[in-house]
Amino acid sequence: MKYGIVIFPSKKLQDLANSYRKRYDPHYALIPPHLTLRDAFESDEPAEQITEKLDEIAKKYEPFNLTIRKVSSFQPINNTIHFKAELTDELRGLHQDLYDQLPGGEPEHPFVPHVTIAQKLSNDEHSDVYGSLRMLGVDHEELIDRFHLVYQLENGSWSAYETFRLGKDPQ
Image (cartoon, rainbow, N blue to C red; front, side):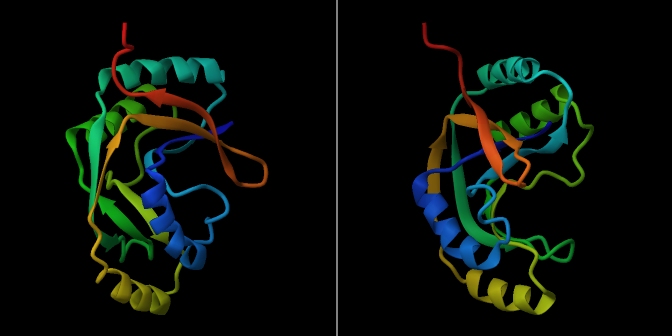
């Protein structure tokens, strides 16, 4: 099965991202706006084994602030435009632990936490869209207290399998 691990931000940030994604992101209908902590990976491990590992990872981290201050782009690597999140110790640690403890090898690219708002644009489209979007005054901060294991359905869409709350279980 194909899995991924993501953070779904607040409705406020999702609504803002979707206002652009519905026009500029062909994956708009496949998954809600999200911040990818662990790229998609294939696993034959039973889902229970993966969720046990994710439970342990989630306990290591306390809730943290997600801060987004600007629109950025991955050009020249690709024509993806995104809300760039500040890289915190918690995001860096979660990302590393998810790669160290789950199947699938090392990440293909350096970790840049972000929420995609446009992708698969032609060079001209990218230039036009990025030129106008980077002028946006983005000033968003929210508390992140969970992440999600998602899996891919046969139609290419993604669905949440389980949610993991950060921090130790309250006793």
